[in-house]
Image 1 (cartoon, helix red, strand yellow):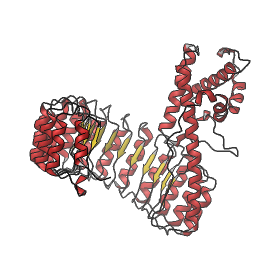
Image 2 (cartoon, one colour):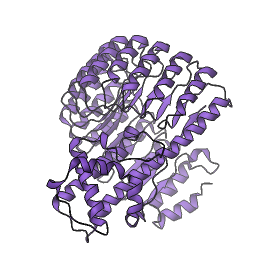
Image 3 (tube, one colour):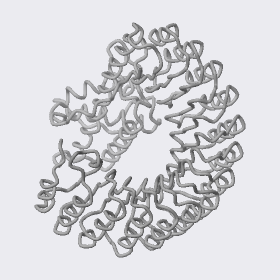
Image 4 (cartoon, helix red, strand yellow):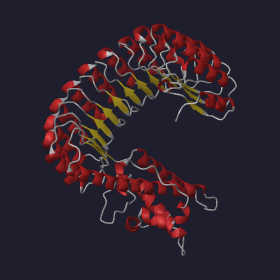
Length: 553
């Protein structure tokens, strides 16, 4: 669609917009330019409907930044601003900082990739030091350096609302890491911290690791590309032994080596929170892969593991393949660029014949030939969980690839149906809880809420409990994945509901239930049966978002 400045200005003045996205308009023949910025800002002075303003990628420079923040002084409806990649520099950052000092409405601020240096960072630090409402601050890919980074870090101490901080690609060193560690020990609001591609090194990693032993709020930490080497990896690994909140960790591009791999593997035996782990390009080789493979046999928390370009070779792939035969939690694995060849591919294919949880597998740039691809195809015939397979750098148009694509589409359809059935359960339970005509005891409602929580977790974590499909392709209630207590509650609820709503209904008393009998009955009651039986409850339920299937070529 062609950008029309006059039409956009009219919509702003008439309060017809909630979100104004004018990003990337420098590429159009009718680019925004400084005059366009001034027209937009004049309209914003009389607007009270827009809450999100995106002017990124417009090359508006410092003058444009000044015009925008001047207009926003008269506007208190905008809460989210994106001025990324606009070359506003230090002068533009100073204008933004001056505006922020007296602002009480901006909640998220993105000023990434703007050539902001030390002076701009100092101004921003002074502006946000007592800010109580900003939740997201993105300073990615500027040049604030060590001194600017220290001032920004010190300003965060009192930012009680901040949850997301990105200061990646900013040439900051261990001194900044030390200041950030001090913040993390006291701050209980920051949940996401991105420090990738700086230079905090092992000393900085040690500071962050120390903070992780005390912090109870951080859930995502990115330290990739920080030259922390094996010493820094060991420090972070030691922190993982006691940290119970971090769910996503990225240590890729750090040359952690075999020593680092072993430390991380040992930490995973103790850690119970980590779900996503990125360890690409760390020179693990076979020995490091073997260490991680050994822990995969025991760990039931990890959902995704990225080991790309670690030179693990075919033998490393074989070890990981063996581990996945025992692992039932991992849903995504990336071992691209590891020279695993046909031997490694065949080992993974053998695993896919018995593994029913893996949904995403990346094997590109591994020297796999027709033989390896054919083995994967044969394995997928009886595998119903895998929906994404990355085989880039393999010859396009080959017959095995076409057959693999068909099987992935089959799996995608079946997984989507499983999600549909789970959402039917979720929606039906919501309806039952909200039904004023359905008189239910406190105990029954408690059971309902327990089941709701379980279903939400199932959907949140994806195909972690993907069932084995029999000939009838029926999806059961995954009772074996639940705790024993929840099994009994679920069985009781289903049978009680079934009998209560049937024509000859009667009330079951939980204390008199024969659990063996109920187990047999529950095994016969599939979600499909409940769907058809309680059609009136589900009539208005929308279908879920589809699960994407891909064969990368």
